[in-house]
Image (tube, rainbow over all chains, first blue to last red):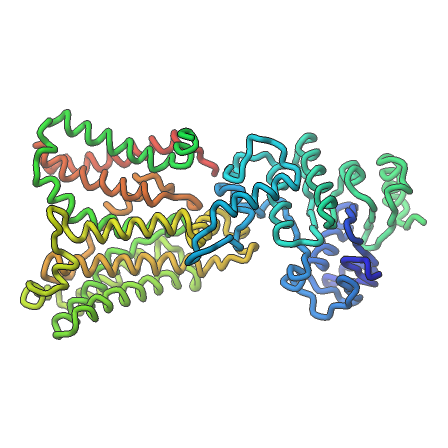
Amino acid sequence: MGDYIVELRNISKSFGKTRALTDVDFYVGKAEIVGLIGDNGAGKSTLIKIISGVLTPDSGEIYVHGKKVEHWSVSAARRAGIETVYQDKALAEQQTIARNIFMGRELTGFLGFIRGRDAYNEANRLMRDIGFTSKVFSPDSIVATLSGGEKQGVAIARALYFDATLIILDEPTTALSLTESEKVFGFVRQIKQQGCSAIFISHNVYHTYDVADRFVILDRGRVVMSAEKREIPSADCLVKDLQDIARSGRPIK
Amino acid sequence: MLSKFVDRNRRPISALAVLAVLLIAFTIANPKVFLNAQLYTAVFTSLPLSIILAVPLVFVIAAGEIDLAFPSVVGVAAWACALVIQAGGNHALAALAALLVGALAGLLNGLLVTRAKLSSLVSTLGMNFFLRGLINLGTRGEGIPLTAQLSDAPFRFIFAGELGPIPAQMFWAIAFAVIGILLFSYHKFGAQVCCVGDNQESAREMGISVEGVRTLTYVYVGLAAGLVGILSNALNLIFWPNTGDGFLLSTLAAVFVGGTPTWGGVGTVTGAVIGTFTVGFVTTGIIAAGLTGFWTQFFYGLVIILSLLGHRFNQPRYR
């Protein structure tokens, strides 16, 4: 239990008469990529919003690094190293990569002037760490000139710089081409290499299968399946499980 | 190395190109135009004031807003300065009063935009009328002569004296522009201004106080307007109720001609300074080239449209 970065126990959340989550148990271990799968309305967003502190659960307990938390909020989540990367509104596109990475936390020296060379080198290191291999891009490149997958990479690099221990990726590959998605997978694997964890949210099972160590499937507000990757021989098996769940509405043992 | 420099400074370089084209055109029209000393006197008297106003306007526009109230802020600041001098007050105190009134008026503009969430276009337009109205009511349209108090005072020398052929206000403008360039390109403030104007949601998400940064840009304009108010009093040795009025369109035009786009997120202080020269030379150049004043507006329009077309094709538009 002490090994979990975040653990949720018996979490329930309703919006009016709609039960978004019912008795959900969920955890993320160290250096683990958890694939959170579910159809629209399954409760994925509600679950991640509870983890990132945007929503407060009606009942249930939240443990962070093994300690029970009482007043969970966005800023408390940030302090605990939980960063969410949203697809659209993450970056200032007319600015350089370096400026985006240090946005709001500029590396400043004398009288608030930016230590340009330090920022450049630090951004460069972060980009290489996360797997930007292209020589075309430097920390001085304008974000608008990057492709969709690379933009996700900048957002992930920024989250890592913010000392994240858990990065929540909300539908990072939606609307991306195959090669672009492949780039994002590369970035996500690097998150693990850095010793950090991630929650990878998607309704694309194939994408999730590629990148995750463990799968959690949500259906109508309940966790209906939780399995290690080694228990599932291929993405197609996972798809079949999902279809069974959708048909029967019952959890798989 | 060179291409990197060009890439980074695309906007000011194209602003410089526009200025060069204009100067060449005037030279062709009348080869003796730049031998006319009057041209330089005219340009160097009013130009520095325009530069001082254009610099912080780049910050406001890059932060995604607009300020149309700065001419009247110059007015109230100059008025406050003149009142202190008229009352026999200390001249340093008078200068301080101008800066303080300017900054407070700027703060008010900023708060109307960021806290009351008014449209900056309309609220600063309203403030421009309102502040000018206050001056007109307070002065009953009459000027405040300052000749007796200022003629031999150090105040006059510091703000409107001459060092060789160069007027003091030019030194103030250069200092102000250098500080502006450093703040915009190498300081945390400039970086945050651009992030706020580029994508305010992401800036907020990253912990930048969007409202605070925007308000500061208006205070910055207010401080500049205060300085211009001081310089204007020192130059004219009289405070006129319409002080600052003439700057509205020409200064804004200078910012845009200089290569700062209207949509926020990017801008160039160097370009705005160059743009000020371009716009300044239009009026004086036309006269010096022997054309009648009727050509002025025609050339203003031509220069503005042509430079925007130039910038449009010389820089990518991301949105």
